[in-house]
Length: 254
Image: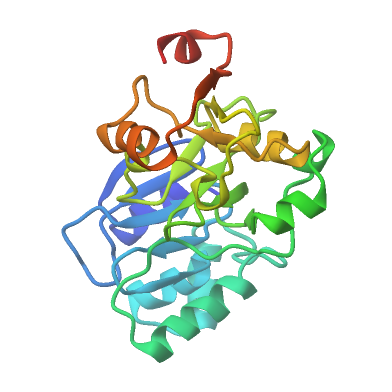
């Protein structure tokens, strides 16, 4: 399914096109802000303003003001034999309906399935116990592991490292990663007052799985933010900092 070509036929103003995701101005409410995201492979879409989301067939129906069967026929004319992938949208539809019922004007992010995780996560040795404890799940919209930042409403999307894509992590729009640490909500200092600082949330989950509750992740970036420095100095006050960064350019810069 050539999602970009479908968007072009619908007259959608695309602002950024990537291998995984396409960003655009929402064609449903005709907004000027590029707050519309659509998966370049599955056609699942989400408007971060107030329109909700759904599959490509539903998008066509809403943009053109037609019924579902007519949208399917329109897609066939565009060379799309099937606009629906089995199991790709039921959870999204339920979440969208719940939002509409509450008349919530804005969504923070697409919903995710807390009952499942991508296979590569458990293949790398993470247990279902640790993933469940930290409320991790799977975004079918992004095809990624979802790691919630439990002291905030933000989500972190960790893409499959085996896919070879350039994107490693994606944060909820507007989330300031330099304002907190991953794992801060339940961190405990070691018996010797030590605190282990690592790069990413998966590093924290791995350490926590093996009993190191004194671990935090900086959530990317080449330096610590002012708020992160304040948290260390005024709130946590560790007697010893242990830096365990990756042996690469990003890790060396921290």
